[in-house]
Length: 64
Image (tube, rainbow, N blue to C red; front, side, top):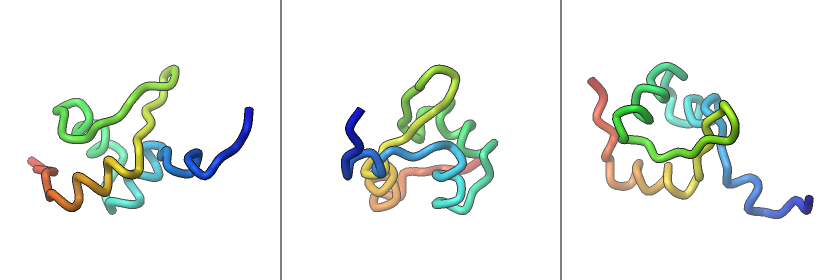
Protein backbone atom coordinates (compact mmCIF):
# COMPACT_ATOMS: atom_id res chain seq x y z
CA UNK A 1 0.00 0.00 0.00
CA UNK A 2 1.34 3.37 -1.02
CA UNK A 3 1.58 6.17 1.56
CA UNK A 4 0.37 9.53 0.32
CA UNK A 5 -0.10 12.99 1.70
CA UNK A 6 -3.78 12.12 2.22
CA UNK A 7 -2.87 9.45 4.81
CA UNK A 8 -2.09 12.23 7.30
CA UNK A 9 -5.60 13.60 6.77
CA UNK A 10 -7.19 10.70 8.68
CA UNK A 11 -7.30 11.07 12.45
CA UNK A 12 -7.97 8.66 15.32
CA UNK A 13 -10.25 9.35 18.29
CA UNK A 14 -7.18 10.17 20.37
CA UNK A 15 -5.87 12.62 17.78
CA UNK A 16 -9.24 14.37 17.42
CA UNK A 17 -9.62 14.59 21.20
CA UNK A 18 -6.16 16.12 21.51
CA UNK A 19 -6.76 18.47 18.58
CA UNK A 20 -10.10 19.72 19.99
CA UNK A 21 -8.88 19.66 23.61
CA UNK A 22 -11.70 17.29 24.58
CA UNK A 23 -11.77 13.88 26.23
CA UNK A 24 -12.11 10.70 24.19
CA UNK A 25 -15.44 10.06 25.91
CA UNK A 26 -16.73 13.43 24.67
CA UNK A 27 -15.60 12.57 21.13
CA UNK A 28 -17.54 9.29 21.27
CA UNK A 29 -20.62 11.15 22.56
CA UNK A 30 -20.38 13.71 19.75
CA UNK A 31 -20.15 10.90 17.19
CA UNK A 32 -23.15 9.13 18.70
CA UNK A 33 -25.21 12.34 18.59
CA UNK A 34 -24.22 12.90 14.96
CA UNK A 35 -22.31 16.13 15.70
CA UNK A 36 -18.96 14.74 14.61
CA UNK A 37 -18.72 12.85 11.30
CA UNK A 38 -16.55 9.76 11.37
CA UNK A 39 -16.31 6.29 9.94
CA UNK A 40 -15.47 2.88 11.32
CA UNK A 41 -12.40 0.85 10.45
CA UNK A 42 -13.06 -2.43 12.20
CA UNK A 43 -13.81 -1.49 15.81
CA UNK A 44 -12.06 1.87 15.60
CA UNK A 45 -13.37 5.27 14.60
CA UNK A 46 -11.53 7.47 12.10
CA UNK A 47 -12.13 11.08 11.12
CA UNK A 48 -11.23 13.20 8.12
CA UNK A 49 -9.23 16.22 9.22
CA UNK A 50 -10.87 18.47 6.62
CA UNK A 51 -14.31 17.64 8.10
CA UNK A 52 -13.06 18.50 11.59
CA UNK A 53 -11.84 21.87 10.27
CA UNK A 54 -15.25 22.47 8.64
CA UNK A 55 -17.02 21.86 11.95
CA UNK A 56 -14.66 24.21 13.75
CA UNK A 57 -15.20 26.93 11.16
CA UNK A 58 -18.99 26.55 11.44
CA UNK A 59 -18.80 26.08 15.21
CA UNK A 60 -21.40 23.31 14.96
CA UNK A 61 -20.30 21.34 18.00
CA UNK A 62 -22.79 21.66 20.83
CA UNK A 63 -21.67 20.16 24.09
CA UNK A 64 -24.18 19.20 26.70
